[in-house]
Image (cartoon, rainbow, N blue to C red; front, side, top):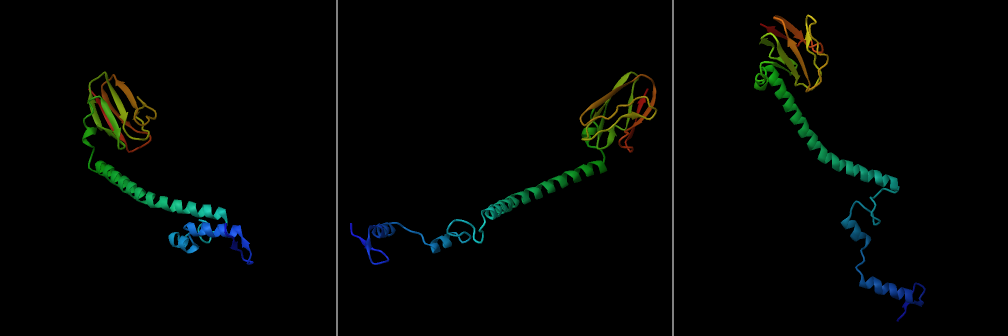
Length: 186
């Protein structure tokens, strides 16, 4: 093995080995790395970040920034969807009940959109009426004369009462004062 000269002019086998390895491999220079990764230094870290804890913060912030790019459009679409649903719900309340609120049988009263439907129901004596809470919040079915009282009816739950005497029975919701209706027993 031919010996190469080291920095002091003496021949040394280590220098020779280094020359052979360096000539046979494609060694990347700092300039090559900078061209491929302009925001990182040769060690792979982001430029200008010396503390490893700061590097984690920067990469976390980049991940958060990337997530924001995904979340913002989704949040916007969700906001538009919810606004449309609210508008549609308000339009139904403004222009009357939906048709599904009118076709529920002669012994059933639906509680939906903070209303009793139907508002007045005529029935024969000894008929049991069932109220179904179709809203997502509590309501009550409370007789104005104190004859019947449901207590709070949770969402999607029911209350029933059998009318055994003729008469007109006005009732209301104690939670929502504007909700009023009548049962007429003949």
